[in-house]
Image (tube, rainbow, N blue to C red; front, side, top):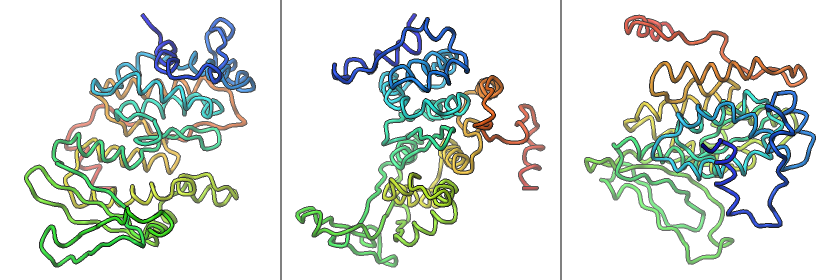
Length: 333
């Protein structure tokens, strides 16, 4: 049976150009992939670091197999993981494990389009992109089509909320113009058509709206700003975050699946430094308990005081509550 490391390599080796193939260190040179060996390997070069991380992740191969939904192409997922690992090797093992498991449980590929695993200091964070939200909207079975776009200064558009659908909103991109003449984006919008033929409200966000959302809700942006860095997603992928903000506002006016609600919570948890895998879908309580136990085991195995522990909730979720108890707790929040 192939190992997790074998599957990751198999998914990517064919696409690698010969002169770009990483130097792979044999597994026996890193022993069982202990945390100490893993972090010693961080000082090695590209391929060696990646190999050490894969050896360590091999311990949890069963969790990834159980987490990935049947409709997700395993090769695509593992190829994306393999491509991201060189940048993620300095992350704490626990944060890397929980970020990848969270991504797998949502059935999103960390390919930079649907989701990204990014590094914030020594912590790996799962970041769903706006295409990931769209993917889950389609999976809900309630949405016929989703439209997310940006209006540029040179485009032709009209928004008249009191007009009948679909005349209330029109957008004709000036694709015949050069990028310079078409101008900068001035608005982001999102709407969807339901399976029953109804159309949702059109959500429109100005750049100022997006900046207000960023400043109020993005702790990652605030941390980067205070540190004098410009590497948060709001810095590097502003337009994508602008679109995602429009989609998340759209979710307030259309029926959402439980999975979409969980995705939003996991997204928010990443912003606040909380453990995201606790918000990821699980087949049952036991599956969630196993994922949480894997995270805790990885966390406990580290002796990296200089990096500090992965932030997590102060109390662990209880697995057995009556429905009445859960509702009562919800009212007290």
